[in-house]
Length: 166
Image 1 (tube, rainbow, N blue to C red):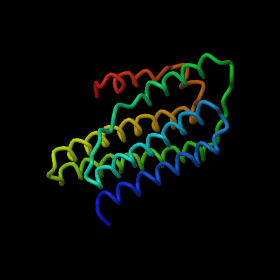
Image 2: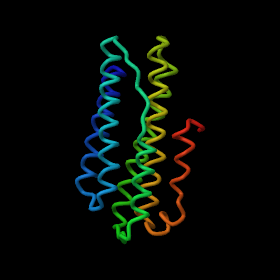
Image 3: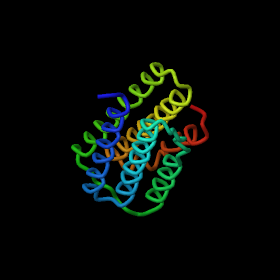
């Protein structure tokens, strides 16, 4: 299996995982964030697919953290009480770990390839996966302690990633 096929497989699995988590989510905001993550993984799949056919495109900029921040802010403004199961937090931790592995994979591949365009795209994919790590960590913290998380507004650290200051 070549690196592109392997990367495409990882992206497809990540997409399916997020769609599965979205189906299980009871809260509309979480369902929305998980669906956005699934859509991002689909976009990554297509990017790697283009690289494989030697017509690399740009990964493009993502607004997932800004969108997630907005969703958290709306959830904070609502009067809704949240109650999650510990198993849900564990699922998000596993997803975060998978994103961390993907980030490392793309950084390794960026070091291995000679083509500057491919190197740039692999590094960009690693940055995207890092944003997903941050978001999954936030989701894990949120489902572990929803009211405190929204009250503390910890999701404001997304601004560093949104503004490219990481």
